[in-house]
Image (tube, rainbow, N blue to C red; front, side, top):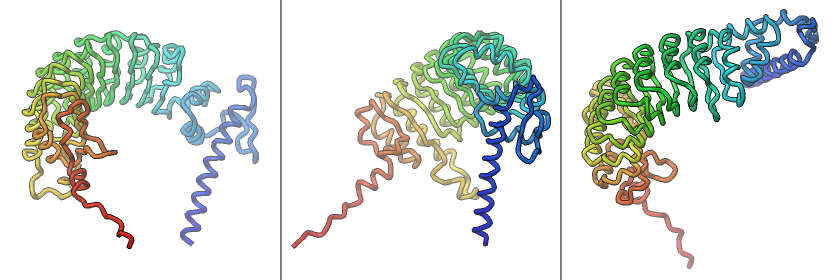
Length: 380
């Protein structure tokens, strides 16, 4: 009986979803609302555009793509008001032309947005669009402005004043910003947990990182890939100011040395992913510091077993092209953190380009090598 009831419940849920999609198609296809067109639905429950319950409309738009949501918001005033009040996530990355004008026309209505994705293949956004977002979308928590090459410091200043609840910000590839503007943003947006500055060579300076370390103490993930002006001074400020840092990508930050890694090992007990690709000043001293951090940060004996499982500590380490490292130092790190793997299909210790490290193996790879192969019995 229970199995039959579950089956009936699943069928009912499936039917509801189909009915909502069917209703939406009918609502979108029937007539022009401006000319008084009616919505004809069987059983006569909904007979006019304004009769659609807000809850039903929001369920419908939650099942369609963002482009259709924008179209639906223009059907009539009732639909627009309902969608604008209920919609919290929107992506305009599908818009390959006139994204700037679209943002300008929508931002003042979609004031309840918490997530806004404006990723672009070709730069379209300009400062006036971001300023409009900052003026109206004060609840925004997640914002993706990656590859917005046309934006200037004015955009960061506007976000600093209008979107202080930001927790996730992606401005990767936005090379026109200055470190002064990024420093200003950090001083106001203190709830940031995830920040992507990949390729932001100009704004991602030690001065900006010092501000991030001073103000953004909740930061958990930072991408500084190919920010070649970053040095130990900036990274050490991060390590001391952001103790909850879990993911840090320093790939291509050619100025950093062992001092940066040692500071991270000593101060960031929750570090799970570290990218050091092409950081050729890194030596064995940094690796041994990471290995020893496992002992220093080991939970107390009275803490739960769950808190002391193999998932603690580094799970991903990229030391590709770090040619100064020796096998013994890297093997010490691999032995210390069981989640680091060199075995096929599970590469989380990435050592490409380091020919002298080919002897480094994770525990499961060693175990597999030691397990004798089972040979079939010989035929007589």
